Image (tube, rainbow, N blue to C red):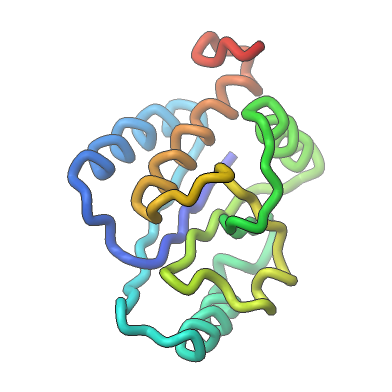
Length: 155
């Protein structure tokens, strides 16, 4: 399985960078991971965010045998087991690459939200920096669940 984390904005916290490194290294034992930070402007207006989202939609990462998900507060919440089962089912149907997008301060345009499934990591609002770390951990956990590993002891 190959995962792509496409995030808007640069991480601001060294501890998040260290955590991402830890999970990415462990994920690489079971699959591939690519991490892409796209430049964002704190002064970006909602209209500029919509234009940016349209540009993002046209990126080659969002085409081909991929499954694209947007992390959004309006998205579906799942348990770790449900998330792993969803990824496993799509993998078994031939999906080769899973692309997860974490937007900037204005999130995604309505068109982007309509084009791709939405995932919510929590009912609580998470800073974008922590959302990427939380997602990396859940991808690692999902791989362990799918392989029957001992990392996850869900119940």
